[in-house]
Length: 272
Image (cartoon, rainbow, N blue to C red; front, side, top):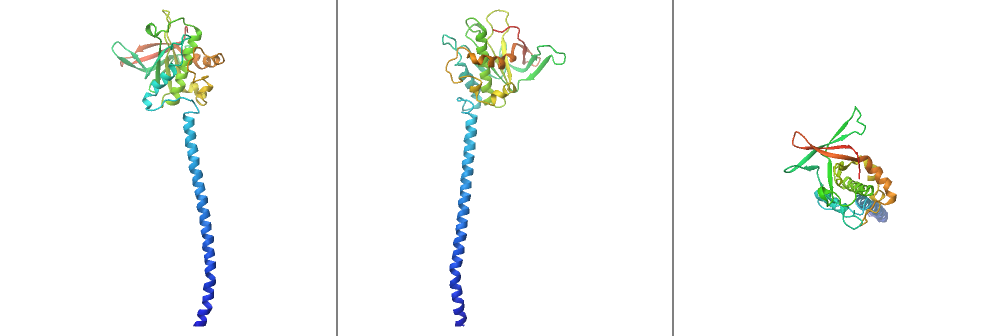
């Protein structure tokens, strides 16, 4: 028995270092695996953080230096205030005040909802003389000067009309970018001071400026952070005309049998 024990003890004693070595090797492997997993987890967290902050930058700073904040219900007013205060006369006066809101028209006693937009085709084609659109996804801005019936004091010129169209374009870009669900923008320009001339509206659908929405606003609106703008920059006139003139209409409102109203858009007879 003693001999048997003597034979087994050295064997047991010799197995401990080997077992310890195996444990140390396994411990090292597990430690390495944990380190790898930790690094991968850290990389994933870092990647998620970069992705999140990157999307935040794309949603705000990369597209425009300014954006509305807080309650989304106030975005329209914030956009109107931000854009309107930048457009001024050579004397430094703000050209128009901008009144934002859902499409409405002032009736004899109260505001009336504008339920539809009726667009008259310029060539009066027999297949589609009038294109009717719901205003459920529309937003409207009224550009009102300080003259009688919202006219702008002073002489109406082509340059001033272009400046107002540029203002409407800028309103549309910020609206489509930040106001969820808005697909069409209506900007009612100040009526001409001369009697008999029809007022103009700029009517833009989101798809009309799809390319412009995919790149920073500064590539469409030169110097969007400029405090004062009294004329459209010379190198921008062609772009502003291209993006707005096809969407300028003479407009009028018509009552509907259900006590709402329609905005009727017709080909422009005169502009200025």
